[in-house]
Length: 144
Ligand code: 5GP
Image (cartoon, rainbow, N blue to C red):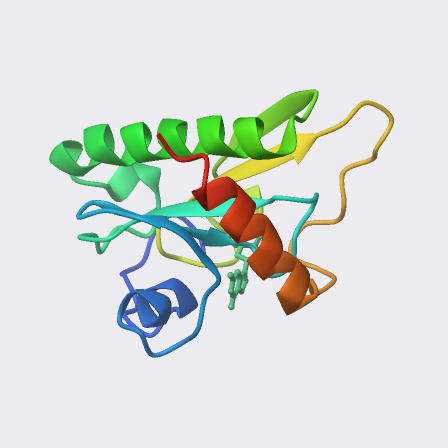
């Protein structure tokens, strides 16, 4: 899906928001939901999505959603750092399939990085659910 098109309410993140699909949740408030990526590119790979949104990407998002969303991204990123002590942290977001986007509900990736540990491949290799739950609990405990 390119930058042109319309929001599909059947996308996987919309289903997670409606409770129709499970997710290993890390943090939630009235504006954002954070949960573990099931195909993590690194240990602790977390996604943050806006709750009140029908934006496929950053360009489409309503301006009043952006502020609370970015505060949520920062809050969760700080918790990831506090829980996992990475050497670095990638915060990224893709717009359109040619840019690497595979799920078309706006989302931010928080990906911890450690010296000498290569980044895993994007959206491949399913995580162990029990391990994700442990990581989610560790991160959740550090949300300020
Ligand atoms: P994108 O490629 O659109 O930037 O990112 C989508 C992300 O969602 C990928 O990193 C992929 O691993 C993740 N993902 C895809 N399907 C699911 C799912 O059902 N549950 C969760 N938690 N993550 C998913």
